[in-house]
Length: 211
Image (cartoon, rainbow, N blue to C red):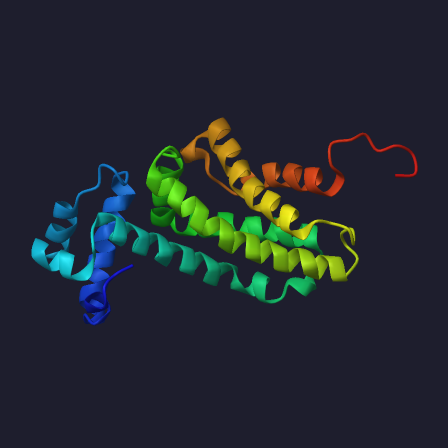
């Protein structure tokens, strides 16, 4: 994360650096992005950059954290009152909220899509691990709430279920993009989400009479 000297900067100068970084990572992959271009647009000496950040990775992780924080703020009303919806409706609405966030913030969406296209990179793997633990904790909380309301089985393995939901969350996006490409990103992703929720609710087995 940024050094304390970065947070001591005036808001306008700090935002100018962040804006330049957002635009750079929007146009270029992490590997091909350039500190030189960022400092040029930010109008700061290159030496100053290293007073604020350890390296390019440090800045990139900061930008990703800004996006993640804004997305959580966007989804906040749903996460703050999970008891208002049943688990399966809540999962669908969280997907909807996340999709709408991407549509309403195309610059963030493009950065995310570039990252998703480079899943063999170390930066992707590191971010995946970091985000997994946070996502798992959110789903554990939702699953326990659903369990208390009798919406899921009492013997459900909460840890395993949370792990699977986190995995499916990213997998359904991978599937949609593989079928439609980045340019097709739209609210229509909910069609795939509905299929996913059907899998979660009913599984794959044929339901016999009385089941």
